Amino acid sequence: MASGIKDKVAILGMGCARFGERWDADADTLMVEAFNEAIADAGIDVSEIGAAWLGVAKDSIAIGASGIPLSVALRLPNIAVTKVENYCASGTESFRGAVYAVASGACDIALAMGVEKLKDVGYGGLPAQSRMTDLFGVTSSAPGSFAQLAAAYRAKHGVAPDDLKRAMAHISVKSHANGVKNPKAHLRKAVTIEQVLNAPMISDPLGLFDCCGVSDGAACAIVTTPEIARALGKKDLVTIKALQLAVSNGWENQGTGWDGSYFHTTRIAARKAYAEAGIADPREQLSLMEVHDCFSVTELVTMEDLGVSGEGQAVKDVLDGTFDADGQIPCQIDGGLKCFGHPIGASGLRMIYENYLQLLGRAGERQRATPPKLALSHNLGGMPSQSVSAIAIVGLEGA
View 1 (cartoon, rainbow, N blue to C red):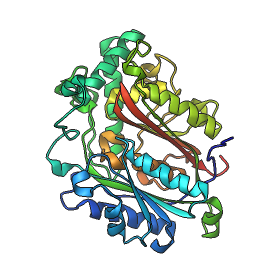
View 2: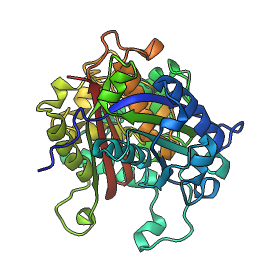
View 3: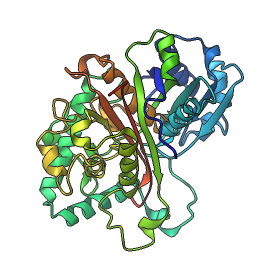
View 4: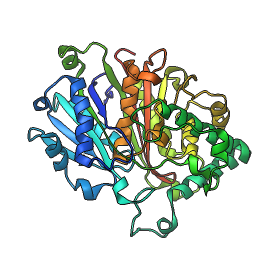
């Protein structure tokens, strides 16, 4: 029987490029920027890396259809490099490849990289597609689909429209306040509740500040076994407690079982991740979260999907400050997708990067007074009706 990967793989080093409108850098430069930080943190030579994974979601023109760009940019020693794509979960997918390679014994040290160079496409949202395979897809948009999620959630739980908008505004204000303290964040400007509530409407009830933009950026992780990490002199080890992905199989769109108010795949991935990590009560046991806040309502609904808020209780928890930087379980303490930025292929690794820094007490001005012990990251790719959900739980060894 499979027993999972809890504590079988340790993070040896991590790095992250500065996110934003990086007109000064191409994709190779961003990958090198993230890698240089990661390998210096790991304390190894590039020749010791046994395999690598590259996560890219949209930048196929700049990156290409293989792992060669990563190998060339980092001058990897002719090792296996695999390019992976899984929508917005592409960074976590690359991390999964590297972690599983080490856990299986296929290699001693593996690398995961996520990168995206989106600003060069000249489009403010996700790059448009010229051809779709279904009639619904022709007229759908990300803001429109997630606005429908907000409407379904509000109807199911009897939430007043103004209460939901105020909770979403609280989430956006929180992320902006956190982003101010992050020197690598794309957006570093505080906003007020009034600014958020009075901003131009994008797709009711989602206003301008309820939507994340797109960014250029890269993030990198180097992983190995705990035994090798200790032999290299590492003392405080951050190990992977769980790593789970759940992918839609069409159920949400092909029956009457799904009411549109939640993410079915997130609930499945969360259940499996908690079982793998040995977590019985996520609200009490998790000390930090990074979730996929592509829209403010996504973060709100995800709190219930992850089981840290009860059904219909996320609005209250948000307004009570449960997920604020000084709350019970801080969420997006680095600014999240909303303010750190969303280079799609890099976002999953960026989330793990922040959790890693916080666990080691190295997050600078935004560091929690008491370093966390267990931290969760959550990616969501696709739309509410058809999604990929990825969850990684990391923590200090023995936690």
